[in-house]
Amino acid sequence: MNLIALDLDGTTLDEKGTMTPEVQAALTEISQDPELQIVFCSGRPYSGIHPFIKAAHLPEENYHVLVNGAIIQSGLEETLCESLLSRADYQEVLAVCEEKGLLVAGVTDHGVYTTSTTINPAVMIFCVLTHNPLFVRRFEELPKQPRFSKLIICEEPDIIKQNKQALLQVFGDRFSCVQGYEAFLEVSKKGTSKGAALLELANYYHVAVDNVFVVGDNENDLSTFEQFPNSFAMGNAVPELKAIAKWHCPTNDENGVIKALETIQSVVDLRRRQCGK
Image (cartoon, rainbow, N blue to C red; front, side, top):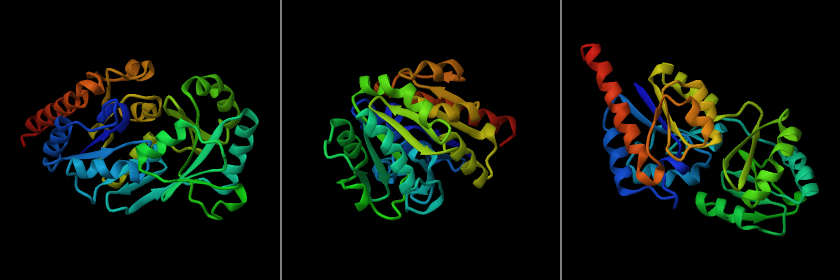
């Protein structure tokens, strides 16, 4: 078996956050090959990826890497493993963000929670993208066992850029911090990454590292590129990914992921011929 791990935003989806009919058709077609399995490898929670599992007609029982690796879950909402943050973790991050005037929200499997009474466009964009309700609560009113898969610091891109290094210095030793979107800095349990979760999933399926292909565009995809050498950087990818990618393809607005899928199919077909299959 071969795993094809696809980031969603900026990779499989265009700049409007939609999966074009051409990409849908390509995913449906390649998933018919019994030796090829599509794995969405996204910063989104289940609510934000399931519509695309259905749109591409992918098998619901297959597992996907969600929330930057915090959860591995199938289209049937069966959880293989998870790495969650606590209420105390939220309180620790909240204290720093309140000093800096930054909005922080906690992502759970049933919605997004924030203690901020001033709601900015960035957190609303996240909720719309991931089909999540937003709950505004005092800290004392948060669920006692909230099951936070990640915390998101949501602000205008310029504000995130101004504060990013300082936040990484504060949180870097205690948490995993990545930026998957311009308006979000995402905080997860220490050791959580897409690369680590994808390796765990590959081991679960007994798939060798050389039989895993990864396609991405942003900073939160870097761990998969470092873990798996068969990597594709989108034309719109950040320089760090382009520098280490094995292959390059057009941008997401040019359906570049289709080129990646075609290349992967060619590589797998060549291996089959070499093995006499």
